[in-house]
Length: 310
Image (cartoon, rainbow, N blue to C red; front, side):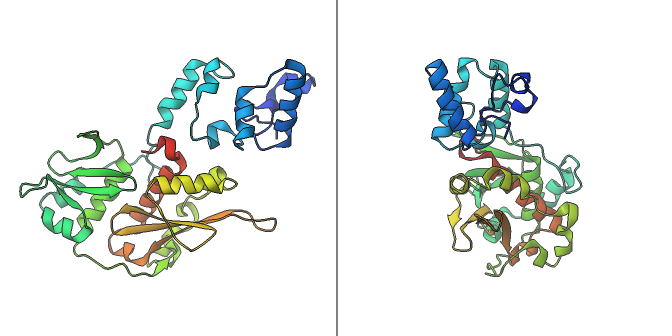
């Protein structure tokens, strides 16, 4: 393959066409091992980036390494300081929120109005969340979204995330919208049905067809041949291992809304695959488009990986 572990595309390089230089290849490839041997023989040392990728069995640093950009790139090759700063900044951001019709997600104030007058103790009882602050004058609720606490602040009409001892506004419109739908619709504490189904088996299962099919392709591109990294990401999000596939994890974006990510490692006959399941009780709280949004937000967190978790 022409793309090197560092991200340089050797396929568009004239040095390769002139046979002056060969591709380094991804870190797991025979090309990479051969390149290191050639570098050591001719130059006396090896590229620290390629050496690291081969040692840690990482195909592409920018896609597969949880520590990118690391100190190996600070030597000035192959990327500029500005490029690395951009990568660090944008890897820490929440991806742009898109709706099921591929438009930017906006949160109408009417969704806040729907929950404004609801009893906070009643919401907490229905959803197993905590009032904030913890007294009779509560102005919001706190829930655990995967691996962090989120405050739904009714008074200021915003989602907040914990920053040390304080709370800061969360720039996460997709999670905000789904949270308002969830807390606005929860009317009683329903038991989990223990009927774990695919989205296609829900009452509105027809919604999850064609353009609304749950997005697993990015997860497969990142983790399809790196199941250990998939496990690290799921566990870092608070996932619980379940016995449902080669590797399976239950994730909790809300205390009463479990999602199941089933990872099939594949073999010579079958390609790796990821299936997303859920407890049937989810349809009592969320419509199909909200389920689609919630699952995609959780999948985004898995893609970010442990080092960049939000």
